[in-house]
Length: 178
Image (cartoon, rainbow, N blue to C red; front, side, top):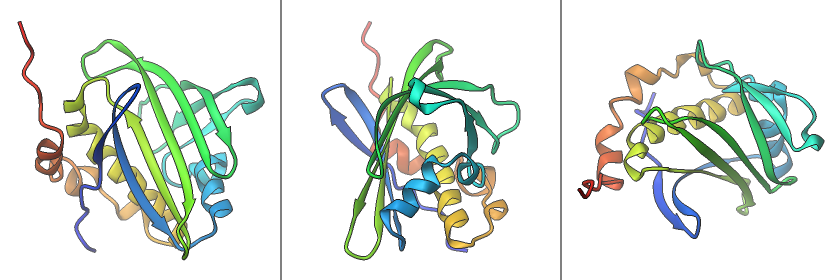
């Protein structure tokens, strides 16, 4: 197996600093959309959701990590099969509650579909741990959708702290001003 690569890059938007990662799929956009929105298919690589999306929120349960609490994700935008944006409120790396906003955009790329995944960063240096985490999950998504062995993908062995230096370089920590 080829060692995982750090793929996250910084992106500054009007609403803040984001980390953005991409993956390519040799599949039509509708199939990739189903892989990231259908609860059963999500369960193969990250977790499941329950509830009625028409209500404006769903409850997400992480199945790829033990002991993670359920989170309510508010649906900010849903434009099948191109855009999904959600927001959940939970504790950040500083122990404080933050809005965690994620966005999935899908584009046709002439030979399949490119997934653009983004997450807002309350602090740019948080990308040091968030980046390897999303590389891990998105690689699990690729494996689940291409017949790979999802169970062979090991976060502690291959992603963190192995990808930490690349993320430290791309997202330098800014010293706090007194």
